[in-house]
Every structure is written in C-alpha cells, then in structure tokens.
Image (cartoon, rainbow, N blue to C red; front, side, top):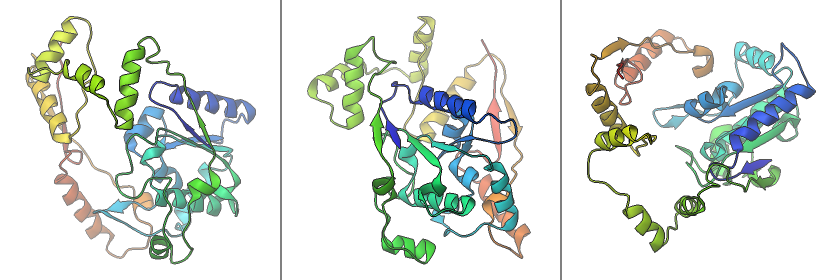
Length: 303
C-alpha cells in the first residue's frame, strides 16, 4: 500500500504508530519485526533506521553506472537472512526518490530471502511519501514501467513490468496538522507543490523577497525570536552560507580529519583479485569529493 499526503499531514507520525503496533503484535527482543528504510542516508537517519540499499543489499551505483542485480555472496546472504528472520512488515519512507528499477530489485531480493513467488516475498510493505516531492536521482519514478530492454540489460531476462501499478494500492492523509492554523499559507504551499502557482500566490511570495544577505536576515529573525530553517537548492550555496556563519563565530574553527571506511560486504558483491587497488582508487575519488564528505569537516562554537 502507498500512503501519500502533503508535508504536515502526519506521515512520520503514522510510521511510528504502525511500527509500535507491529511490535505490540509480534513482540520480540531479538528479531526485527518491522523494518523502516529510506532511499537516502539523510532520510534514513531522520527515521532512525537504514537505507533500502543497506537493508536489502541492493546494487550500488558507481560513477553514474549501476551494476546489474545478482545473487548475494554467501556471507552477505547469511547476514541479511539473520537480520530479517522475524520480519513481518517493511515500511519504505520518501518513496518518491525510489526508482522503478530499485523497486523491482527490492521485490526480487525479498523473494530471494523469503523463498516466495508473491509480491515482495509475501510480506506486508507500506510505501510512504509524496510523489510530487523529490524524484529519484537516477532512474525513472517509482510508478513508471521498467522496460523489457532495461530488465534484459540488468537481469538478463523478464519482460516489461510495472510493480507499482500491479501490486500497490493507494490511500491519502488529507488533514494538514502543521498548517491548519494558517489556511492561506497552506494553500500557497499546495500550489507551489503542484507547480501551478497563480498570480496571487506569486505576488504574495514576491513581497517577501529581501535583498540583504541571508546571514544578516537570519540574525534579524533570530533576534526577533523567529529563527527559520535555511534551505538551499545547491550544495555550493549551502557550503557558502555555512562558511559565512562559521567565520562569524567568536571562537576559532577546527578542521577535523575524517577516516573513511568501506564496507566490502555491501559495496562488493563479486570476488575480486585486486581488492586493495580498488579500495585505493575509491579513496582517491573520495578525497576529490565535491561535497567534502570523504576528507574532513569543520566545526565551531559560539553563542
């Protein structure tokens, strides 16, 4: 089943409630009865769980190319079999970022794990999210058909398939708890979400455009007790803002070197006679990472 709803309708609350309900029915201290996964690290972290790639040991994209689906090595299969031994339900959050190909991979991996020919290994799967939010970074949206050509290339068999259409039912959360006290703002958000803001919406938003720097505007709002969350469309803009805020702190900043570890059981699914060379090559690429996630991070403190 797919549960949708705009931001503020209680999707995260629903996930927590269902997790608690499943645990109350199948209470166990040693087995995971309800697994929650998300397509990205950040979304998984916010839910306190893991990525779908980690949970189901899915093929990982390298240099813009996703390796084909294949059987897991014995060690990885044993780990996943143990982790999912008592599984009753899977919840996948932020489903808009799951590609239709990865949805197929999840279905196949669950069939392999639970030795079933039913959809998703015969287990209950709940998809949560808003299809009008972020799409997959690579690949087609989750509701699109996976073509016979793609499946032949990735799997070596199968005809075209649309799991979303054939196996998923739909329901929707409609009461916006977050903006229920401001109907006008709620309507503006919904029009922008759909990509069809009218003239009145654009005029209202234009009145709130400011020319001063974001950091100065932030200070003014903070002093007034209305500190907002600052969001940026690009990584470079976010980095610039963070550097500006760090430079403005009264205390000096500290650069901390990070140690990069590669989990070979997740990223390497085939026997390799040149593992050390591949790891060294991977580390070299991480050092050139434009997001600076493979080398160091900077912190500062201040009032």
